[in-house]
Image (cartoon, rainbow, N blue to C red):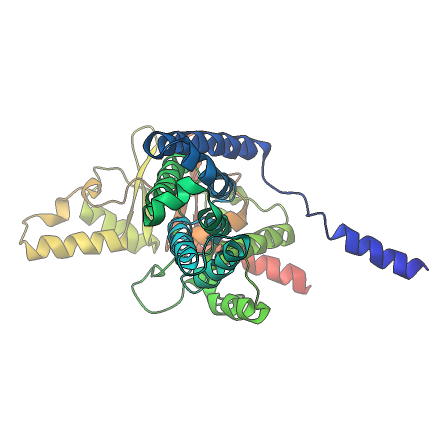
Length: 376
């Protein structure tokens, strides 16, 4: 008797979703955007096409607003999803009504056909089904517009989308979530990024999603980002409380903006380093100069036959603004900076003053110590 009861409780528990990890501040942001967008769009549709048409189309509009503002990172909420679904659903509904007349049966058929078409067109958007239903079973005002009903429907879609683009980005939510067509190559080669050469790859994610065979409202890029973040926190837990101050080099060689190219090259050769921080008179970081910077500038100067190029100050060729970190940064946060971003060194600052530098060698040594500790 206990086992059937346990199975029943588990089955009932599946009806309640897990708690969301979003901050209540995000609920307020999404709620305000949803309300304002529906108000503005419905008002505009009311002014152009009358109150009856606006009222009959506000249902799908409200549902779309929830997606575009509350879950804007999902595939169902991207720009083409709303534009393509509204257009597809309207055309399908008009065709169904043209051949079968307006009825509950025809409206239901329009919803199903619209869904079937939205999938291969990559514009699946649940409120699109509601659009098909509203257009197919609308009253005389909707039927009188005939094919011109496309105008108020697409007005709602476009107005809502424009508001979502403005409001989301102004409230620090990136929208739309661009699909990664090309992967940036740090060294302009065909090699995968360092973090993609081991562990889970993009191809692995594609195979896993294909095996599941179900629709999942998350882009592959977002899923990959989530997995990478999970791996980062797992590694951070594994490595303990190792901070930048514990692995950074303290006796740092640096130059000033007025240091010449010839002087900088001597420092590179004597200390066997590939990058040097550039400090002002208050030891504030103003840039970083690397061998690559010097080589590139020397080649340009040679092509232009620029005389006295050895006396050119490094301020003319340094990289700025310099990417830096603070001494309390966990070592795991340094890994993407010194690998996928292609940096050879990372200046460490405290209260704006340079106190050390973390190089790729320092990072490798820290990771090696962690590996030895786990093997031991």
